[in-house]
Every structure is written in structure tokens, then in C-alpha cells.
Length: 263
Image (cartoon, rainbow, N blue to C red; front, side, top):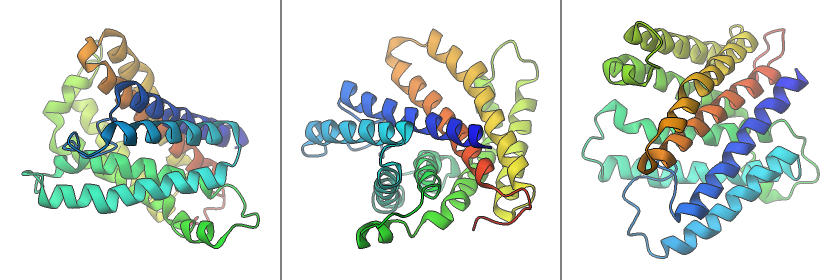
């Protein structure tokens, strides 16, 4: 399973690097990395520049396995702080649609990326870590659980918004709504299997393969034909699909064949 582990790590790291380049190029954050109403943030240009550089460095550390554990721990910690102290307050106190399940989708996407950082960090041994990094490592045992929870939440989005999501299915694929429901069921089953440790290795492998298939047949063509104003959003959507595929492959590679839980 070493190949699967490395493939997943490289997928995830490349996406983090791409997000950093996105931030540096557009002087703003991808649509799911921060809540939408942050354009008036004081010093946004400086924050974006520093954040972009740090994201590129973190992604490079993960791809090339240089200081991978501390880089992943710092990345996961920052993403977790954003989720807890920016996304949740925004959703509850600012968003007018906080009672709509779909309005939480971007928060779930950000949390899924956070879980991936912890899953990656957990694959590298502690080597004389400082008290700070030992503290930052405490969420590692829950990385795969967080990922599974977000996958289950995405399955609910497929069920609740099937007709809207059907437009994303390539035109040459028949029965669009059927495939949306099928995908929702596959996401739900995979998430439950990972949480309950039921054929976790198989479930996570199939999940990663399914999302990678979407990346190839759905997201890449959408990037190719996207009008320029929507190109950044399409690239981000493709990137997070590739990252989720990578996280699933890492969970699969770290799952013992005996079925022993990682948690």
C-alpha cells in the first residue's frame, strides 16, 4: 500500500500548493477556504500574500517529504482554527441561510482539508517534538473520523439538492439524477464504513477511486471549457476533489487489513 499512500500524499500536497498560488495570483482566498464576506478584512493583501507563501511551502513540504509532520500539523491547526472560530461564527451569526444544510457545504469542505492534514501528519513518527507540536498533534487520532463525517455531509447534499447537482454531470452521461443519487449513496456508505471500521481499507480505496474519476471526467473538462470569470472557481473545485481522493487513499493505506480501527 506504499504506492497508494504516496499517491494520496502527493495529490493532497499539490492541491495545497495550488491554493497557495491561487491566493498569490488573485490576492484573495479560494471560495471555500474562508467565509465569503472577508473582502473588507483589514490588511487583506498582506494576509493573502503571507498565507499564499505559507500554503505553497506547506504543500511543497508534503509533496517532497521535507518536515512533513510539522508542516501538516501547522496546516491542520490553522484550518481547524478557521473552521471553529471563523466559519462557525460566520454561519451562525452572519449567514442568513444558516438553517439550510447546503449553506454549510464550504465549511465542510474546509474541514475535510483540515482532516487530511492530520491524516498525513499521523503517518510520520514523532522525533523529539517540542511541547507545542505535541499539543498540535492531539487531533491526529480523529483525522479519519473528521474526514468521514464531511464525506457523509456531502452525501446529504447530493440527496437534498439532486436536481441542482445533476447539471454537473457530463452531458454524455445518461440519467443525470440517478448518478447524483448513486454518488450520494456511495459517499454515505464510504463514510459510515470508515467511521465504523467496516471494510475500511476497501471503502476508502473505492472512495478515492470514485472521486479521482470525477476529477478526470467532470472537473478537468469543466476547467477546459470554463469562461475566464469562473476559471478560478472551477480550478479550486477540481483541486479539492483531487485532495479528497488523496485523503481517501491515505486512509485506505493506513487501514490494517485485519480491520483494526485507526481511532
